[in-house]
Image 1: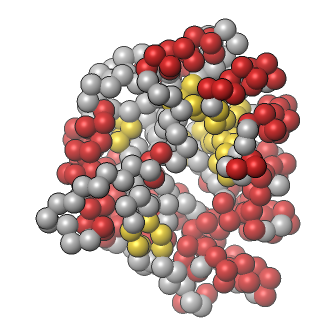
Image 2: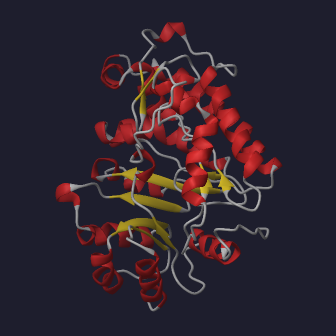
Length: 357
């Protein structure tokens, strides 16, 4: 680790010590707390339209606007707890498929791919000159030009494995492939896994050259290489299929990284938890319990304790109203709380209570 000074995060160094303790299921003074909303990055439609934009893609591709919008949010704000100011170059969750020629369709708050892989024999070619790749480069560079002493710059929501192949092939066709032609996806998955690491290292090198930590949409930094392995596609397949198609790719990705926090999006993916917990170099699980009947959080306390018992840390979404019950049921070692808040006063109240845990 190295020391950093940020205007909006004067306690950056102490916050990073808490994060590093959390990676190792330890607590130095209190568990870390991150103030945000889950998927808040996809909920910030602003209604702004400029004459030079022909369509929503132009809006997303306007790096000066994206930086201006972010700096307006940062200016004058104090980030409390383990909440870090991060300018995040983002073109949507299917961006990795665009590097292989899939066009993206943009809405105000996200984008999705138009599958282009109609036959496995056509193969895949990673296009380093893709307009999407070049736009991520320019978004990263403009952030780096303005960030010193003010904020961090992250890398985009990069994906390998089945999630990327599903974006390229289409979810339903890929599901049928795993049944009707189960060997066909394997060579492309191996290619995607290897090239994912190349793309990751390219953008990581840009951050390291600016002496910045590694961070992405989750907002949890590492001074090494921070990775969020995941497979949302896994909720639709068996554990046998998960072990064959996805688990080896996750293992390859994670061996390459310094810190790994596996994103488990709901109980469908959690069916594979034992396999995930067995992955080498796994530091933590981000548990996303879902909405509706999957709330409140206390019904998932046994799952959270199971992760802790396996020697892994957990990132948990929690409301202020759930805090007391959660503190009473779960030990603090290895817990990182993600909590919504109304204002700085409420954040200070939460931090004071968590310090007594």
